Image 1 (cartoon, rainbow, N blue to C red):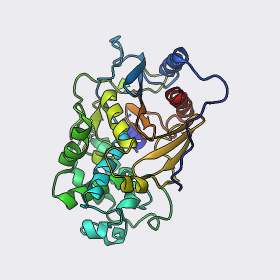
Image 2: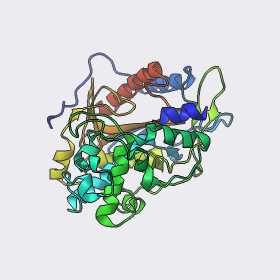
Image 3: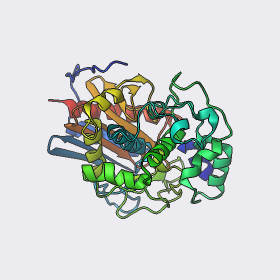
Length: 377
């Protein structure tokens, strides 16, 4: 099972305005039913929660349980692994440093991190943030996967994760095309540390957590989950769900997916981040230069990639955000471009195009229905 888990872990600036969808849109009862049906679908999550916020008004939809056999419902204050939505947090750190003049989007790995392989030196911060760098993905390296399989709780030196692929050239010329890579955000965090002389964890606290009031968000190195938490499961019918919440340590994902948070904190984050409240207007304009590319797993509607942010164009309008998945968890955070309306969806099993492609399409459809409910006037 562990080997399967490890394998699984791996334009213009004018947007479409919010508009009414054709035909009736799901009401609150229908949304609750759809979320409940996800938890009872083959391979579906034992627990699910969706938090919609319009201005100061919050609506919480939930289904299933936080822990099988307990009967305890999922709460917006439960901790969880936020998976690759953590890449938005490393983007927030980097873009704030750009605003402060401590980094530039055109800064190269060769300039900021000269110890990295010479073949990678021309890659820029901008290309790391929009996944057009060509860096080989350390998390797909056979040696890395072997070590994790042998000891899923192994403590890696997070700042040496790129060593696993240091002997490999770039996959393509930087800027040529989009390929999602966990290596990109490891390099972003290392650039932030080199530019400031501060540890990435401290930069997160100073530049992201404190300004947005995130009191239950952290980047640990170990495998333990803080209480209370929604348990994450491997759901592979006909076997019963297996609790994998603390199977893997997070030192091996670090800035690419190691953050632990709550739906409440993630809501506060995406409203500030997707709404552009953390950065200046000039930096924001750079962030919103879109290229072809989807988040992993793909978010609702049509996906485009910006700088550590994705644009999801649904049948009801546009939201900005990020997705993620990790053994036991699948995540979506999204908000309107002004940050006034937001959606956080958290599921307690991993769903992606590789392990459960049909269920992923169903999840994306439900997410789009929630977006439409969010944008409804």
